[in-house]
Length: 236
Ligand code: ADP
Ligand code: MG
Image (tube, rainbow, N blue to C red; front, side):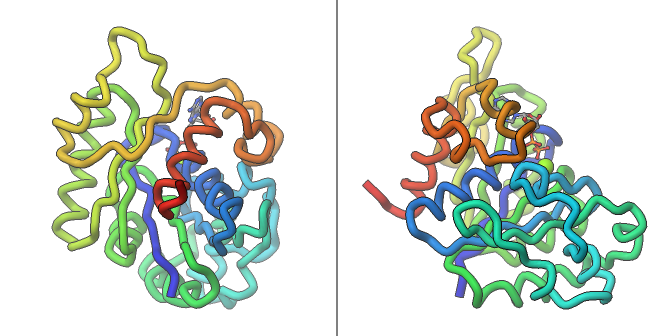
């Protein structure tokens, strides 16, 4: 049975997909069998970061009852299994998000760790992902609007009875206007398990469709994500 981790934030653009994709590859680099699923079925872009765009059968086909989940799983970088949602609007329109729970169960036996890249907001896919997951990682930026949205995700996660593994503060550039890590921990009342700096390598790697931790392993953001992965699985 896989340990399932949902990556959510409430707010859009905090770096959920970047963290989900690179954390999956980082965990695989440490020898874990990992899958990463794109639960952002409307604005799917996990497949772009993983270099797997344009696959014929996607999660949205499965959620529409038109395909078997086994046909929507693709092997990506470092052997990570990727379940892309697909960018077709037509297929998204037909997808039934309530089928997501059963899809997640079907992936359980294939890997040790399943990472779910959630959409922004608190829609059906996010709620199903969080309630099905063993743990939540909330991705925040060091600014108040992001923290405010994260508080909602944390409250919902508590209500659903899912463990909160902690927060990742992404895009930190240590400007004086930013909220500090201590302040973020105090407001969210959850531990910060990693701090990922603002790093231009993130965009460069995304443009190439190669995960950052593979393309620029020595970049500050890649190193921070590798550290988070090591911490999650207890590697010293
Ligand atoms: P989300 O999935 O939360 O909407 P993304 O992972 O798609 O967020 O990231 C949003 C944008 O921010 C992307 O253009 C991505 O390249 C950029 N980004 C994310 N994290 C960083 C970072 N640490 N440094 C620089 N740019 C980043
Ligand atoms: Mg995203």
